[in-house]
Structure formats: structure tokens, C-alpha cells
Length: 197
Ligand SMILES: Cc1cc2nc3c(=O)[nH]c(=O)nc-3n(C[C@H](O)[C@H](O)[C@H](O)COP(=O)(O)O)c2cc1C
Image (cartoon, rainbow, N blue to C red; front, side, top):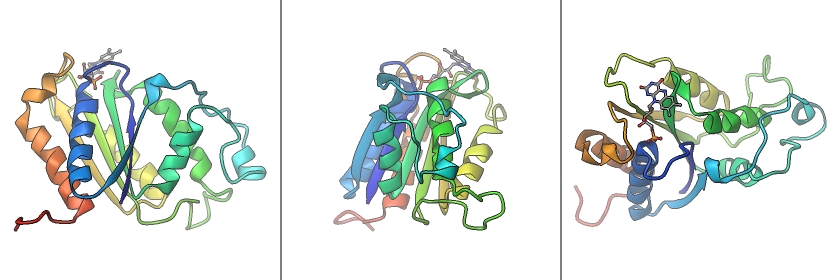
């Protein structure tokens, strides 16, 4: 299984990236092929709203560092998107990526029941890290991504969130969320390891 991992935090030792790394290590142990893209290292534009992906091309007309990331998502069986919560939402880097995924939608996506140019049946994992310890906060973020990625033809979506992590690396002591990352990878990639029940 191909796993495309997209990291939206700008900082080193980021909590969201650590959780994504944990998911990917477990996925790799189970035979997943992982390709990771760090958005903050890339030079790319936000969607220009030019509509060329709806009128002339079946992909985004912009050719920049995000092009290989968009292609990796096209090829992947599992897409992992990790972001810090910034101002009650995902980071700007993550939003810039998200807007460019508009190119996955067919021209008549509003009326067409098949809205996506992507192969159906992919799996999506959203990972978020936030300083606020309240699990009732920012609960609107995952449902939006769930809706968008299901529109792209994804059939399984999962959510992993670390609440109450502020400083870099703080999530390392959060066994509950780290285990959830392991478990989610085990469930999505399948392939039991030798000796496992
Ligand atoms: C610009 C900025 C905005 C932030 N906004 C929020 C917020 O709205 N809610 C929150 O709980 N934490 C907020 N935080 C804290 C981060 O979500 C927190 O430090 C998180 O661990 C960062 O994830 P990362 O380590 O993966 O980058 C913000 C941090 C920054 C720098």
C-alpha cells in the first residue's frame, strides 16, 4: 500500500509531525510504502481560481513544488495530513495544499454524483495538534476534511488529535495518542505481523 504523508507544521520536532511519523513507522513495518512531504520546505502558490482544471486540463495548471505532492496523493492508497491548529484551523501551509486539491474535482462536481478524478476507495487520516486541552474545542475541523476527502472518493477517514500539547515534542509523553496512531496504521494497512493474533 502506498502512503502519502503531508506535513503542515513549520517547526522542527512538531507534535503533529511526530504523530504522523509514528503512523508511518507502523505502516512501514506492515509493508506500507511511505512518501513524506514537508510543506514548509516547499515553494508553492495557493489556488489561483483560474478554473483551468475545470475548463482545459484534468489537473492543476500551476507547476511548482506542490505538483509532486498532488501527484503523490493521486497515486496513494492512504493519505496522511498532519497540521498544528493555528487560530482554530489548520496552518496556512496546510490550507494552501488543501485549496490546490480543488483540481481533483471534475468540472461538473456540483451536480455529478462522481465528483472526483481520483481512483475511489482511498483512506484518509487527519492528524492535529493543539495547545488547548479541551477536547470540545475546534471540533469543526475534522468534519470539514472528512467531507472534502469523501468528495474526492475516499471511503475511509480517521482522526487523530493531541490536545494540550504546546511546546515542540510534548506529544512524546502522550502514550494514549501515540498508541492511537499505531492502532490506526495497523487497522488501515492491515497485514498482521508474524506471531500477532
Ligand atoms: C500562530 C499560532 C496559532 C495557534 N493557534 C492555536 C489555536 O487556535 N488553538 C490552540 O489550541 N493552539 C494554538 N496554537 C498552539 C499550537 O497548536 C500548538 O503549539 C501545537 O502543538 C502545534 O503543533 P505542531 O507542534 O505540530 O506544530 C497556535 C500556535 C501558533 C504558533
